[in-house]
Image (cartoon, rainbow, N blue to C red; front, side, top):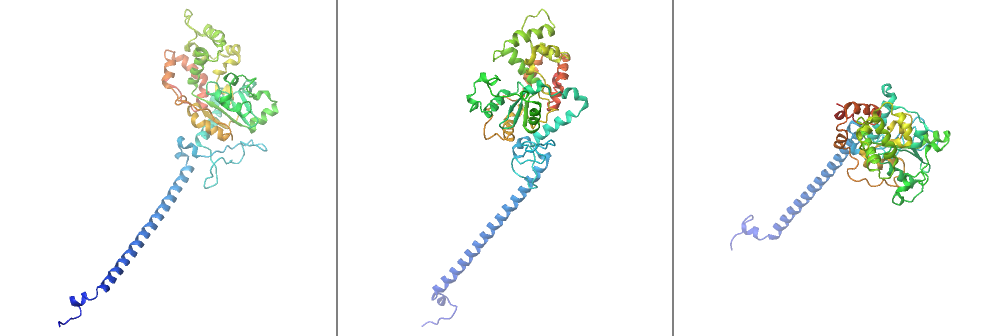
Length: 391
């Protein structure tokens, strides 16, 4: 019989079960180690995600606090507060403390979208400029009060600035006042009929009631580039005249032509050059008196709404109306009740080419005189001086 010694191949072959158990143990140990390794990796990944989230949150908070980091495209992220030293008891829209209208920042302070704050601050600065006082200030006369429409139910005042999309804002207020259930149901011939549209003017109230509303109501109006607005007024009243207002062509146009047309032998209807010369005349007022309230379509924003005398809540711009309209509705607290009608794409954009085309051939002297009259509007509302026309 052969001799079997420990450690020989024959001895190893006689214990296969022990070897299998040893291998199984090593596999289990490896799997346990691998599982723990994955768990540690997952845990580390979770800590990394939390760390990055904290860094991002801190960055966002710092961005909100830094006015220089603000972008107009981000304005919907910001909050609103309108400080007003003239707060009355129960005042809704102008508390001395900053009022909440959205999210609260980490330091519990609330801020208004900077683009709207900057517009109001610009107005305040220009109003304080003594050199521009004649162009920026006007009395809050009956003429101004006639331009301001009232919605008592929601405590809103809207100053009408013609040729800046005001028809749509009138429709919004008509619905809010309850005259019609929706904008779509308002007949076009009713919008501008102040006997039927249910829009009272501020001038219809007593002095005490006027002052109360001016101090406590949400107040706004809309502006656009002053020269582009004049072009729109000229086209609407003297060229197309879609609402059939014959007095513009048959009474106002002949009056302008008689006074301001240089070539007396020319028999064409009123030209934009005639219109510019009339508007730039420092003595235009005597003719305005003959035209009456029809001139509101080309009167300055200063004369219409008295922005240095009345503390408005928001100034909207026609060029950014797609953003401004929802913001105004939200600030007035009526965004859940009515929407501003859909704005066709591109219709509110400033068209420099059109402006150049209309002013082509008009003397620099006449354009400078026109700018001199509307300079207050340009500066109060941040519109760039049209050097491409003036120089």
